[in-house]
Image 1 (tube, rainbow, N blue to C red):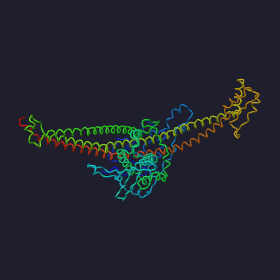
Image 2 (image 1 turned 30 degrees about the horizontal axis):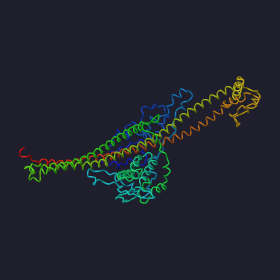
Image 3 (image 1 turned 135 degrees about the horizontal axis):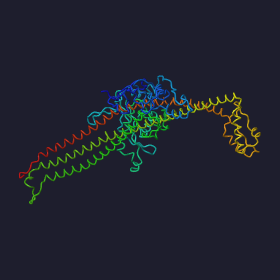
Amino acid sequence: MMNPLEDDSYNFQAPLPGSAPVDGPGTSLNDPLLSHPANGTSPFDNPFASTKPEQSGSVGTAASAAFGSGAGSREFAGFSSASSMDFGSQNEEAEDEDGEGEESSSSLPATISPAQPRVNPFLQPRQTSPCCNIDRILVSTSKTVFNPLLNSGPPDQQPVPAVTIEEAHKTSEGGGSYITYVIRTNIPSAPLHLESRHRYSDFESLQRLLRKVHPTVVVPPVPDKHSMADYATRPGKAKDDPKIIEQRKRMLQSFLNRVLGHPVLSREHVVHRFLEPGNTWSEILATSGLAQYMKKKDKGAGLKLTDSLLKNPDPHFLASEEYTFKFGQQLGQIVKYHKRISKHFGELANTGSDLGAAYNGWSLMETQGPMQSNGTSSSFYAGNSSLPLSHAIESIGEAVDTTVSATSQLNQALELRATEYFAEYEKLTTAIEGILKWRHALHVEYESVTEGLINKRATLGRLESSEAESQRLAAVLHSEGVGGRRNDVRTSAIAAANALGLGGDPEAERSTVPAAGPSSPTAGTSTISRSSSAGGGGILATLNSFIDNDPEATRRANITKTRDKIQTLEVERERGLAELGSANEAIQRDLDRFQRDKVHDVRNLLLSYAVAMRDYNRKAATAWAKAKEEIAKVSLPPSL
């Protein structure tokens, strides 16, 4: 059986259009995080989306043209000819009701030409050739060295990952102290042997940087920071707690091995320098050229997977969000019950220890036997220095003590191999939620631009229709010898003012209005000045300020501005569509990789669980079998 970690379907090039996805071995096709098999139907078709064949202007069609199409293709995780992202028809009814827009302006034609061979920026490492010797070794090394398969043997016979953190030292610097963790990288086949030292904050900063540089990747988690409760209960000693230090050693070791086992994250030079001796994190970050990423805000950080801001969500990623949310809840329940049973085993071991001591004390009493009135032991007990009854009771005490020891070992094994493992996967689920929320926010931005483009095209249609009607009326009036509309508008305004008793001298009013033609810089902006001799001149000027004295020029200026805005939105939409398509593909690819790794990890977890329970029961069964033999040796008194 092929190891899922050695599957080479995760490459750095985008799949060819129409190619079928590759599922890892042992994965379930019912899992919505997995790619679906090619069966001639896109798994991302939205049954609620419009599927009218005449809507050639749908975004789904544009996406198919931009990212490839074909029978049975994934169409890059969410884009299909009947995609849910079909914004071309969503305003169709509203525009028909207005009766002003034309079909050419209400629909959104595909402005993206068929795609040329492209490179997905989210799938590519930031450098194509190895950047250093460590990178060269990692590229040629099997990923199983960082997450080896466990066996059914005892803990001391399990394979060791390539990166280990077995030591932690307290370091004093600048009047303060902190814990440094010793990182040893050992790949004998390379050969590669490195040792570096870093504090917890360095790991946390590295993890945050990788998340910001690679928003489509499930970046492994690091252990949580100390809470305020920890500092409140143990002021000045929380960071020195041996239990917390041991837990951090294990989780930080897992973090580094998962990063080095990832085909994209392992190519980052900051990771290579992190393993090299003598490099401080501040130096690594300053010389990496990535410091600006630390200032970037996490897109979608305020979203929840249960809150959808999309009018037309992608059904596939909607199912992924729902599955991730439920999976996280399920893991939370498992972690809670494992902690509860761990507490129960601890209490059981303490109580069992007291019970074993009580049985041992009783066995000492039975070696003497009951005293008779003359101060001697009964005849049955006399001369029996190796009394079977005493041995039987003692064997029970020993069996209880052995069970207590096995329970303590089981509790420790379950905490290390199960509770922490499940807690780590709970954090990995949170990482998946993060990239899904990032994609959700990206989709919201794309949808917003698309809707803005639709509205602007509808506005342009109305303006062009109005301009055509204006020109037709002007031609009719000109043919009948009627004066221009500008004088008509001005005369109507003065007539309205006179009707209200607000007008002054018409000649004076006329003299204050300069003639504005198409070549005049004051066209469309002339106003009736306030006359000192007219009592209502101020009100008339205010009324005139609301009247467009040159509506034709204003309308043409608006048409020009709208066309410019449409061009800008088309560029933004094209860029957003390409980014969203690339993000969908990259996220799906990494989710597929995560699922293959999950099969490997859960196998190790369940095997460790089974081995721990087997060893516990073997030790307990052996102790109680021995106790049974001792009890069988007890002989009854002759009188009975």
